[in-house]
Image (cartoon, rainbow, N blue to C red; front, side):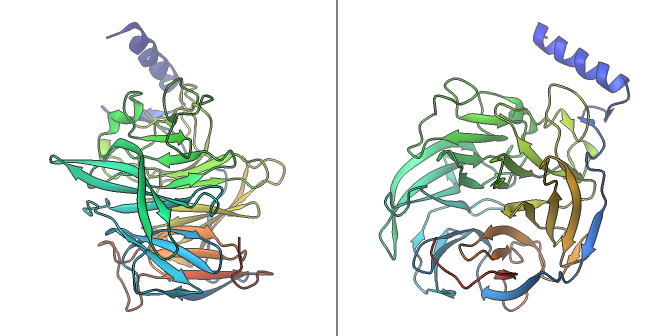
Length: 391
């Protein structure tokens, strides 16, 4: 055991002994949830009118809006589909060779920050090579009705049937952020030589920015289990992320969370969960004891919306006007209880160029109860929003 390891172990035992966290045998230190408010269920919110925008998709994962009334939606089995003025076109924009197993396959989409002048669409997907699973981010060149492969942006990300992360997004700094999961190997989330269990930060060309927190590394933050949502606060530009808690590891379940991501921050998995007050790890902003698994997240004004799967609700987190790190309220929209919602499992939520929210269901992923119109993209019309316009 190295001197550094001994110091870390001593620190963890010290904080646990002082009542800040409870440690499961052979597992992580588990603290309380950080928020001081209880979730409120709102079955039919007065300020949102819901309508079907697109129907009969096959496990949609991500949605991006182009100009001219067009949008692209990814389906996990490998297709990118075009939505034109609210109608799904028959021909696929692109069909990728992916490993569609378990939770793997085609996942996140993102547009180059200067699209369409730089006509590139980014996609993250799982693939197999010599019997092993990996994830990578590729770049397609937009040609109007089709996209053709331009280059591989980042490769060698661990993959598995479960815990692939998969969300990608460009930040206000025009850098590409990539969510990676622990690929069911919890220990890699703390391994700085491994890209799993991290949030990565890269240039649009896939290069490592000079101002990344760890010299020569694409790693922006570590200690994540299965992050699937990224969004920036519209006023402070702080980065928020969603992450899945354990689903049986160490005898634990639930503990899904929303985090404010700090440059170089370590978020604890698999050593610490929740409000442990262990200074080596950044605590989550919100944590739920019951399994909620959050997917995509999006801001509408200064409220954070969270698509959730098992809880089948769109969660709205009311953040403090003066301090966005303060949680003033949590509403579970369209939910009857902790696992029963009107629209079923929700994978992603996106703010459209018209000011409305667009929500992707994932009822055909093998864990839901699909209806005849599933999977769907729902449009949630907000007060004062207009029809679909250009970016």
